[in-house]
Length: 480
Image 1 (cartoon, rainbow, N blue to C red):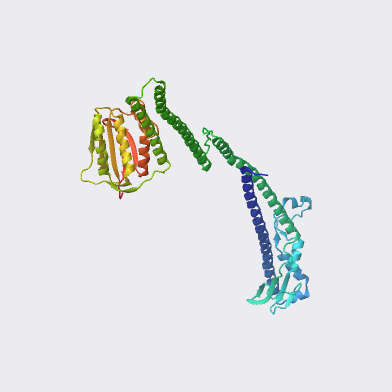
Image 2 (image 1 turned 120 degrees about the horizontal axis):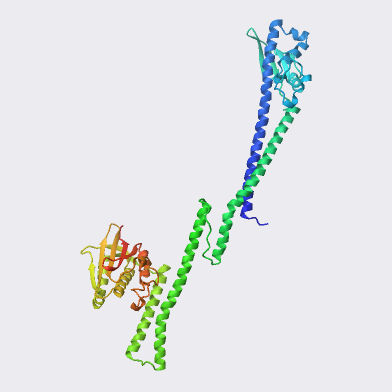
């Protein structure tokens, strides 16, 4: 039989409760036995003290032990007068008024029961000053404790009590049995109550786990909309929160995957459709294989090749397969070289390119020259494609305490503030201004983000004070 979590938890709690109850009962019984024996011994010690005082008085009157030899009954009278007193009777043990003597009341202490008194009397012994037996009921152990009897400061005898041969008498055993029975009933009641509480507690603790297990099955089956209610602030509540966060992340990932597939299909469909149309036109004789037609086909093939290359680069950077050969390099010189390569292209599009780089100052970073070249080239390509003719691009480099900060600020068209946070998503473009006609596939900034993060830096997008887009890149400097 397979036990569930609720049954296991119930058994664990019940076992712990049962062990606690059994341990408590055993300890209480041991304490009761020990305490009861101490109580009996204390009563007998009281009787010994009383008897010693009585014997000393009798000896003082007679000046010898002859009175005990002449009258053995005198010893019984002294013992009876000094017997320990029993506690008042219980209500059910009280005699009816017509049977009770006039001088006896419920509050009057009673002498010890005859069976206890008999055992007490039979275990007493009396020795004279020379430790010769005057009264005894058997051999007296040499190491038995005795009470000296004094007269005028001199020891005239010894009074002692033989150890018990039976630990307890029948009434005392009956009393202990009754107490143990009461303890057993209390223990059974506690175990029964513990079992009920354990069952309820186990069900209460396992209920959210059952809900979580059901939601997990839904999640494993592909239903990423599964959520569990958060009903507490303990570890189970935290687990429910983490599950909901995981389900939300998987749901977003699935949506992103579907969007990614749809966008890739759309991006590939456009150049392929154009190529197919051009080729079918050539096959049908609608168009002639002129120089312009060949150039159009070549442009579409190049666009398709750039898209495939970008996808390949992005996939490599995502899985960490891009190789990085990092060395110490001067970021000022690298930016100057890259900007010099793009000046003619910006000039041909009538875009003013300003480079504000520190003079005679080296900004050394630890990075891969080829990947950083790809990063800044992508940013310059992005500005070149999407900045209107007659606009402006400003590139600045400055060093802070820990980072090298490179800013790319271009002029119109601008990017709506609500779209700035999505510019680094794959295949994302602001359709109103940065559309497919420019030839971009929306992968350049995603690749830039991966390169910057591989260098331990950060890249952000803001609104440019020139009216366009402001891309800020921060890369840790060497020795920071």
